[in-house]
Length: 179
Image 1 (cartoon, rainbow, N blue to C red):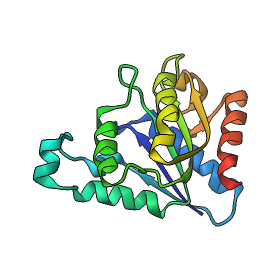
Image 2 (spheres, rainbow, N blue to C red):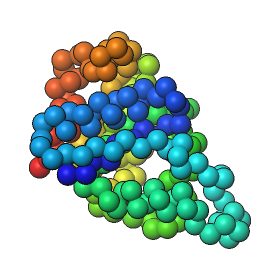
Image 3 (cartoon, one colour):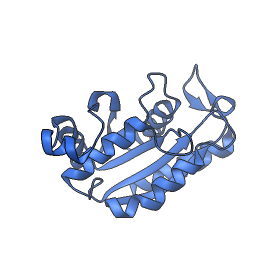
Image 4 (cartoon, one colour):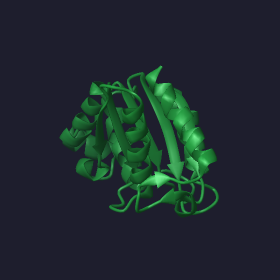
């Protein structure tokens, strides 16, 4: 299984990237033959999407590469950062450009959608938006989970969840990718 994991965040110290990477490691530990690729959406930075820019640039190579990465994956784990109750500008721009290649951005790939934040809301607002809109973009969402109060529930040194209840929920969520 080729598992693609990434954070919908451009932060170099992204807690969502840490969560996505950790979740992917749980899949790899629980199943033989799992190859994990962790993407950094900074590698796909493009001008802000507009119809004018699309007419001028066509479909940028970065969006084409991102779309191809999704096509190559057998499963996807995305962890969403929340900016003002919504997607980060970096992710939304990448998504907008990619959706112009094909509205079926996720190509019916099984996925787990996650979100976390330092606060008690756990970026649940953006996670709800992502899971609600997912079917319109051919996402086969198997499970979703918000992790509240990241720094209270995640051991930064050992890169793992410390809250047993949240760990159980995360393990159950990622186990859906093996089915």
